[in-house]
Amino acid sequence: MGNKSHGLKCGWTLIAHKTFKLFSNDNSYVVLDQDSDVVMHFTVKESEFEVINNNWGVNYKVIPGFKTIKFLNVPDEEEE
Image (cartoon, rainbow, N blue to C red; front, side):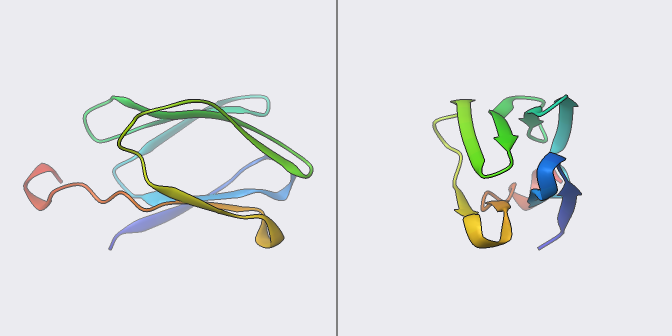
């Protein structure tokens, strides 16, 4: 599938396709897809995950016990 793991503040982890890009400023994060469109803007704190804004087509799940955010979107093969 080609996922990549990113360590975030407060022990959180983001797992997303390797073509996605992650940018951060303190505990605020922005994820861009392979077309440089914003997929999600979110923040993390010790026991909190907050979505500020997200793309309507984003599919993700949060696993609070492991402080993990996993993006389920996979780009089309021809776009990789």
